Structures are given as structure tokens and as C-alpha cells.
Length: 144
Image 1 (cartoon, rainbow, N blue to C red):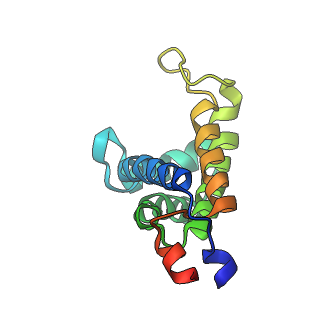
Image 2: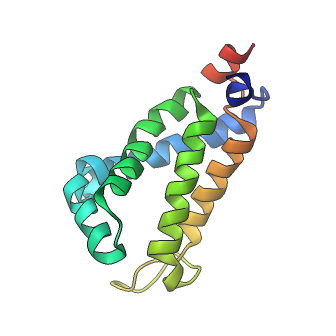
């Protein structure tokens, strides 16, 4: 268990972890609960199935990883496994939903958005997968 929890006591990882936690809480709230103008669970699963052919169980795992993983990241608990799940989730979104629209996020209305945002989230998650939870994390406390 120690290699999963071990982390450097870096505060830069804390900033990264908190930024990703806040982002995925908001994004996961849209997908799961329909907050902040989102479609909610049923709407997202329908959209992903119809547009991208993703089966409902895959969507459910992704949405639950987004939403509940944000709480784990907030306190730095199981940072590496959560970061792996988020990296996979954002890689799928990048390839299935955004790749065809190019790089840039800003597009004309109705055209979809490029990979810019998903790529940033993917790289943030990958950084936490490599570095762990950093200072002020439950992972750091448990690994000592």
C-alpha cells in the first residue's frame, strides 16, 4: 500500500490537487446532479451513448470518478488511484468528444470544443499520478 500513498511533501502538488478537485467537483456536479447548467446523470449517459457509443456502465464509472474523486483529492486520500481514474476519463473525453474539433477550446456556437481543456486536465491528473498528494494530504500522513 505504501507505494500508492507515498508522496513528496511538496506544496506545488497541493495547489495542483486542489485545482483539480475544485474543477472536477463542478464538472462532476453537472454530470451527476445537473447542477451549474448540466444535464444530470440520465442526460449525460444518453448523450454519450448516442454521440460516442459509450455504454452506460462506462459513463457511470466516469461520472462517479469525477464527482466522488473530487472529495478524495480535496483531502489527498488515495490521490494516485483517483488521478489514474481521472486521467483515463479525460483521455476518453479528449479522444471521443474533442479530438475532431482541433486544439482550441474557443469555437463558434454549436461547433464543439477542441482538446485544449481536456488536455490540461489530463496532464494535471497525470502529474498527481506521478507525484502523489503532496503536503497536507492524508496519503502523506498514512505513508509515514
